[in-house]
Image (cartoon, rainbow, N blue to C red):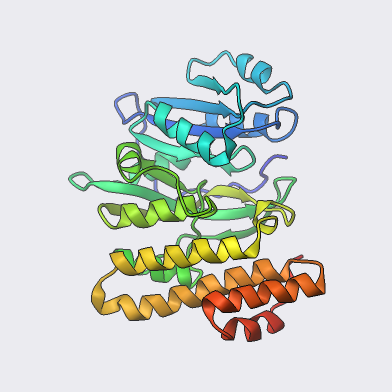
Length: 313
């Protein structure tokens, strides 16, 4: 379960106790005997100080509380919830409790390279007010083996440049590769979307509307991908509704002169993501019904896209 591919960074900062405090927030549930210890070691191995490692134990029924109590590390602090708050409730409880000026929400099966935070902090320029900083990301399988790397290749520095690069698959939007300004994230309301499926993307768009962003090309974070994850367990109609609301939010924050072009890009991009979720359904009848739902939101072109797109494997 270890990540065997850790590339060298191309930007580094000089870490030290004088730097801003950073919180690595780890929401977890029943992974004490699987991924949690690996993620904890990735957090504890960071070269940046000062550092807080805040773990939200979402009423786990295994020995998560005991595992967390075993760490003899003053940087580690556990929030042991007596009742399960749901994933989104746990995220927001961590944001509320964080003491750092910067905040990383690191899922309990994702990973970061030892210099992830150091590299992110080194990308920040003095005199600018940032909402977030992002790096490239790699996809890893259940064993931690890298399957694909996506450097963060954003063409330009504007919010429109970042969004276009996302729609052109030149950069990946994930929690594990994004370090947030804590106070700004709280100011925009933390983690919320219509069905709490795209809460990280909603937050990014809200932050883009008001503050600067910094981009690092180097791959410094690992997103663990598995076919049977929550992405393919949620009704397709809920994905459609969340993506449509996100598309409308994007239209409100971009330059009016570029609104039509970006709206067309976002519609096509989100349509294909929804079609992919529809195509993952095993039953041919239910799969066809899900494609019809996508067409209701994104037009008949999604039906043609669905027939030509292979099922996820």
